[in-house]
Length: 274
Image 1 (tube, one colour):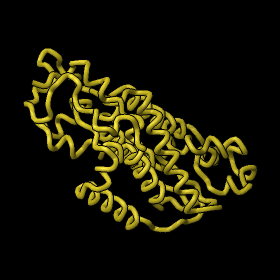
Image 2: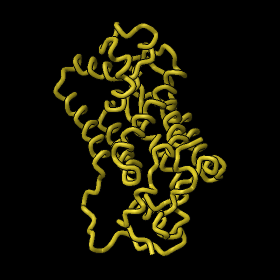
Image 3: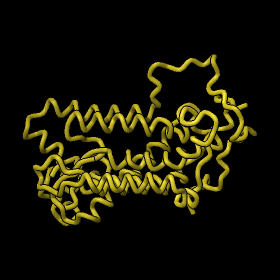
């Protein structure tokens, strides 16, 4: 993410496998009769990547002036909320649409590649666990939380903020509710990748007291603040929207329980656990 210029119902610990398999039992992984595809990308993650790539591809056909106007129209600009929307590309409509559209436009190929890799890393396991539509709502919700954090800490800022890093930071935050539980189970992180619905959700009250998660969260916050290089003007291209990253991460960490439906998935028997 750059700028150019009570918990959910699953938080009661009921997310243990419903088929009677204990967390200490040996894990067999996916049946050998079900070969893994070469490109095993869940459909919603693939759709989000396609939109981001499509936006970047479209910009290649625009003139420099048109590209600048296009990017600004999709960007999140706090000043729009202070009565400056009519002065900017996108007009008054962008005052509302900017909370979503900014997630799908990126500064350059490297920015897009980094966010795409992060989306694949964090979004794949979560989509396998909660399904495509809940993953989409969670992604957009975290992105919105990141955008609101950015606006609250930069009221009236005219510089545009773009990128999906706020939403992706939220995916990371949600995954942290599963990460350490998976490490304590047979199969470890492989289990999180191949059978995420079998990993118990760490209740929020427990997660906030978990020393390992506290260290990860503190490190994430410190790294983002350290990466801050200021709030340049509309032509600055290197500033990091650390506020959106932190806002998205905290939202994902705290709100993932509302989206989690692993108990339903764990009854499918797709990944047998002896």
